[in-house]
Structure formats: structure tokens, C-alpha cells
Amino acid sequence: MSLNKERLETTIIHASTRGDYEQKTGAVNVPIYLSSTFHQESFDAFGPYDYSRSGNPTRDALEKTIASLEGGSRGLAFASGMAAISATFMLLSSGDHIVVTEDVYGGTYRFVTKVLPKFGIDHTFVDLANVDETARAIRPNTKVIYIETPSNPRLGITDIEAIVELAKLNDCLTFLDNTFMSPLYQRPLDLGVDIVVHSATKFLSGHSDIIAGLAVTKGEELGNRLAFIQNSFGSILGAQDSYALIQGIKTLGARLTQSSESASKIASYLNDHPLVDEVFYPGLASHPGHAIHSKQSTSPGAVLSFRLPNRDAAKAFVENVRIPVFAVSLGGVESILSYPATMSHAAMPKEQREKRGITDGLLRFSVGLEHVDDLIADFDQALIKTSEKVAIPN
Image (tube, rainbow, N blue to C red; front, side):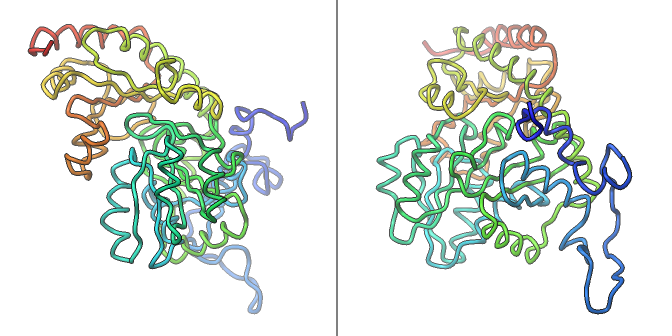
């Protein structure tokens, strides 16, 4: 197999050092360039770096790495996932309209509903799994269709190629949040998407130690426009966090593979448990988006959600489970259990949450690297105690 045909598990290890760093020094790690400014040798011609907001060699290595992994033209690193998402929306102008998946991360919902309207940018939330409904939501001034697949927190699946085709027919761009899958399992740019964004805090970093966001554009012209926004807006990722993220990406293949294998077993266990009303995981054949997800992704991933009968049951379960961290975020080496109603989707009004199926009994679980048998045993004892403490409706 030639190098340009190597598998992604190989590329993620070596992508950051395939360049000047390795050729000049032989170093297996990219240096951390802790410099805010750079000396210029010539009065008339500056070097590739002048000020670290505009460009830093460590961040540059990270940006080239994620562009390579996603198969894009330009990668850009931001101070957070929301900074990356916000920057992509800054490509829009007053009077524009966007179509957004209704099952969307709470921070994105907040930005779309509370910030963009101040700049004259309108929005419509739709079920992107329904292509006809999506088509009806498009207006003459629609410029972007914004996708999450799998979506947060109910793991809804959008047919990427179908939405891309619809967008092209209507001269729209497509943005896609690929946080749950990462480029290891899903490559949206290969399916025609224009910009991919990541909360790199999650699986790409993998250790719950940094906050970071990434964006990758399919085309060079769009990449240049987004780079202008990044430089103007200034919410860039610092050199130390860029280095930490490069190191996290190197172990993505091993981490996500094990976590995803465990998630499949846990989803099956929960799906058969009498106390669990519903499990949301695209690896289950009963999931409505199972077939589409299997077509466009290579794994169901390491995140699942499940619905208990009510808030009291969810509360009792959280208080009795021992191994997972109960916290916001996901994608760490430690399993993380969260309660969307007051965590990831707290910015969404209760009526909007319930409309989207984010009920008071819904829990989201990001599977870490603990032994899967220990996690299942922990869930089992917590569910037993939950059934003993809470009156469960028939």
C-alpha cells in the first residue's frame, strides 16, 4: 500500500510531523512556539509568521493535520468549539437565512437564536432527516444548511449526500458538526459538505484537559474567507493547547475504537433493560437512522443516550452510578454521564427541549476506556437501586 493510500489510523500518528519540523530536526513531536511575535529579517518582505494571532508554527501544524485528516483544503484552530461554529456563521451577512437541524447542541441553538438575529440573520429549525421538510424550509435568501449527524443529544441521523444535493440545487453552503464521529469514522467533505467543524475538546483531544475548536473547508476560497474571520475575530487556539491537541489526535484511533466497541455493548444492554424506555444509538438496528448512518460512517461511535421514565428515575440513577463522571462534555478517556436538560441543552427553553424529545428522563453517556464489563455491572446495580427507590409508572 502506498503512503498516499494509507489508512487514517496511520495518518493521525504522523500527519503533524510531515513537514519542516521533521525534515530539519528529526523531532517526532512538533515544538511549542511560545512566542507572540516574530523577528523579520527584511524591511520589505516579512516571513511566514509575524504575530501569533495571525499565525503560529505550532497551531499551523495542527491546522494542517486536521485538514489532512478531513481531506480539506484549509484547517483552522479556534479557542473553543463554539468559537469555530461562530466563525463559520460570521461568513453570513444581514438579510441571510439559515436552515438548522432541530436536534442541535444547546450552545449552537443559543448562538443561532440569541446572537445571529441581532445581525439580521434569520433561521428555521427543521428535522433534517426529512428531506421534503428541509426543502420546504429553504427560502430565496437561505445561504446555509447546518447539520449535526449524529446529533446531540438524541443521535439523530441526517443523510449527508441528500442534504448536500438539496443545498447545491438551492445555491446553499452546508456546514456539518462532526464532533461525535471525528474524521476517523466520518468524512463529510468527501460527501460534498463545504465546512466541517469540531468541538476538539471532545474525542480529538480525548483527555478532558483543553478547550478547542476546529474548522476545515472543502475549498481554498472558502478557507481564505474563514481564515480572514479567524484573524479578525481573534479567538485562536494558543500554542500550548495546539500542542496538547496534536498529542491527543495521535491516540484517537486506539481510544475511539475501544470506546465505540464498548458503546455498542452498553447500548444493547440498555436496549434490553425493562427500566429503560428508549435507547438512542445508531448502531442499533432499531434506530431510524441506522441504515443511513451505516452508509456514510464506518462506526456508530462512542456516544449514546437513553431515556428513563422521568426526572426522579434519572436523578436516582445518577446518584447511584459509581464509575462515570457526572459532568458536561464528552469524548474523554473517562466515561462521562450528563443530563442534557440542565447541562448541554440548558440554553434551550423547556418547551423547545420537550418538542425535540429532550425530556426530563433523558441521559447522555460518553463511553470511556474503562472495562466494558465494569461499566455494565455499574449500570446494572444503579438501575436496580433506581427501581427500588422510584415509583415507575406502568
